Length: 588
Image (cartoon, rainbow, N blue to C red):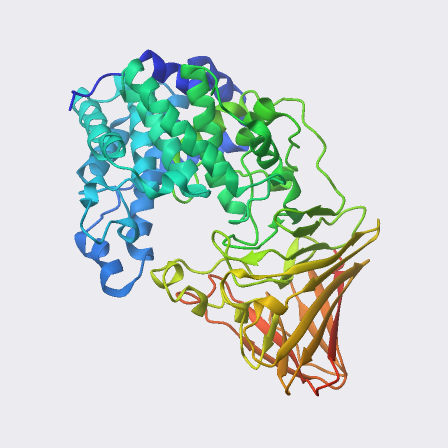
């Protein structure tokens, strides 16, 4: 293994405006108008006064013992967040003391491995310290770029050790193995390949970097297959920032250092770049399908880079712009390249669409709150074999005045079971935690064969109508046909399930709600949130049951309740079960 080298000419070019001191001077001079800069410097001051988070072996072993990820990962990501914040503050303030930064680099180098316990190879074929997972790759890119940009302000021994480990733990194992994620149309492909590329450009000689680039670029291209022609990130909105964010900054770095990809196909990338402006239902509420939080924000700097690179990108509304440059996981590359692009964020932006959209490949209907609709609504078809899949065909989400109140409640708590054989036991992923029918407690099946057939999509200006045949999703022996219709007219959403069975079947229309439901009366149930309320009016002959899902491991990270409208089929006649949801914003 060759010795670690100082920053190469490729590394400086790969960092783009982040390598130019003038960028940081302009950001510093504009700090009063950039809340991201002020927030970052305050965070760095706080973290510099705290010790580096301890990372004992006992916390690493907790995943093996109990399946809990949170204890170890909280400490692990505290270190990365500290690393990123202190390094960015040092770039913004050339006179800032970097001893706390150096201490953090040393602590991360002292970790026996960088891959998470949930991602190591339990077959023993690859030593844990050589596993290239998302976070080992991210750590490598962070240490490589930080030592490249700030090397003269850090002890030489610290710089050399960090760069040596970047090679030994990530670049060399990448070269010597074929990794499963290289052919995965998911965030793994873009984050791992993108991070390796950023590290390679910093620590490898130009010929070596050029030799690795075609393989890295092929994986970055493969990651785009998860978006398709309509640009939707079916893994969840947060995975756009994560997955496409790394694709974006790594592609930009490779192009700047080595020239454009000769086989790049920008179509999918351009549509994916435009997804964030299409994903908000109102305020910070995003389309909550798959593994995503129900509210989110977006990096204006990353979108500025996407706008310059692809065009047709809408500037985010002020209320959805992320104020925290460094996220909870301390993702250095997104923070660095997003912040550096804020300096040139005055691009020509497209207007964000404020009208209903149907995405034919993902089969998602998205209705943003605005001049065409007083509420935000999303509904979906698709299949149950998608990346970060939930068994939720026919699911929907209803937001009022920037508050999600009824419908899909987003991702669950990540633990061993969440990504294992028992994934769909969690209400966050299984049908029982989604606004879809349950048939005698039989849930939807998982896998691509469980799919919705789209019978009708109508977007006629002020109203939308989506009709789905969900029969193939339910492995119930008595089910003949199940057709769900979701309609919006003004602030009213109507959900109708027409169920044909060969024997009596107890049908539940389940409605997860994010505020505790009030007492039912006269065929209605009230759900009142902080900003709005929804009245659920159900068929008089149906029963109503309410309850709550578990919070924490095995459930949702936030409190979620449910309202069930229950009736039984009487063959040969079909059961038509209709619930009308009427939304209203609270007076301000």
